[in-house]
Image (cartoon, rainbow, N blue to C red; front, side, top):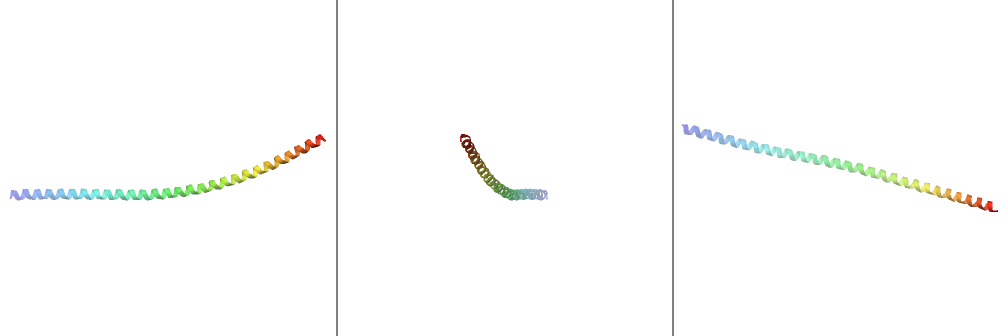
Length: 102
């Protein structure tokens, strides 16, 4: 009888240990799965953020290119206007010198 009681206690302890190990393994699996889901969600958000940042950078580059083209056009126009004024002033100076020498 005592032997059966000891045997029952040992079996109960063995079953409890198996249940504890099973619960621990299940907990680890759940933790690993949750970690994988968290990493996947982070990767998705990072990819979305990166795509959005690239779109913003591309739009900014287009605006910069347009502004540079416009500035180049304006500089060319201003340079042409200055060249024409310089030619006019040179012509006036030559006319003035010719008039004074006559």
